[in-house]
Length: 376
Image 1 (cartoon, helix red, strand yellow):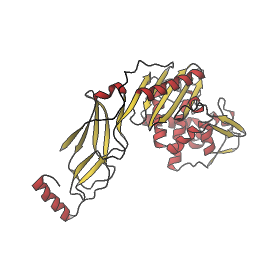
Image 2 (cartoon, helix red, strand yellow):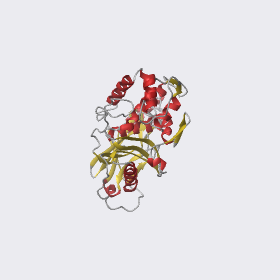
Image 3 (cartoon, one colour):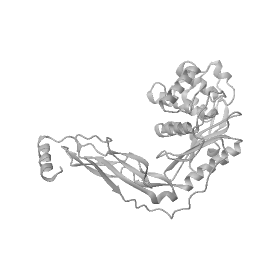
């Protein structure tokens, strides 16, 4: 039987603000995304492929992170520097030909110093050649559904076939933050010295100590203009922004900061249940426990403009009773959140505990109770 439970959303919130004025920024393309629920708070040409410049190094790094997680690569492993890597122009970490550099230093070179030479060292070591690594980047983009991206190199070097949409860039940023927090920490490093040369992180919001900013990556070529992928966390809310194609470094910083402030000031996360809080107790058939509590994997809620709050409603849906055994983490229901009667988002509900199957006596007692009372 499918059961529904309507929730009365009585939330303690400040008085409603007036609806936000029309907002725009001076950039070729941009997007602002709420990290927790993937809600797009602002978008300007989000799906148009544009030259990403060094922002595409997020994909280069993601593949390296995947290799590290799999155990096929380690941070203390050293990799050889080829002449091609040594001769790379543009941003560099200044590796020396015919030397070996640790993966840990190469990652800092890519992330902090935006080193094109470091990218080539990693690509050649992991795939045999830059082109082979590029093939992996394009394959990974297809796996992730990044329809606005195609890679021609591992550095973001100008090439008409090297493009990404700002939505795809935000998606890669999300994956790194969500799945690789131990490596995301590298994006907050403010400076890195290698080969006697100290370089500062190019992220203007990080350098300016904009509240909550802890990553991620800049980009610039004459074709791409100035771009930035950044993320910030304030009051347990995280936003991800991508700005592409601003006209100068000052505009990149000011427009990015303005977009970030717009997201934190004009939108609020309305929480229905905290992480780990029981949403509903569902009957269990032939289990050692009569019921199993359902919870969300994270906070259950939605981010809205403050003026949208009155139209917010939620409904719990589950099919019960559930047959034992039940495993903790098993999806058994969902919370459907609607806005003005239209679906806004759906959040899975999972079992909070294991419920083993009962022994023969317990199953017989449960069956008898169900016949008499209609429930275990």
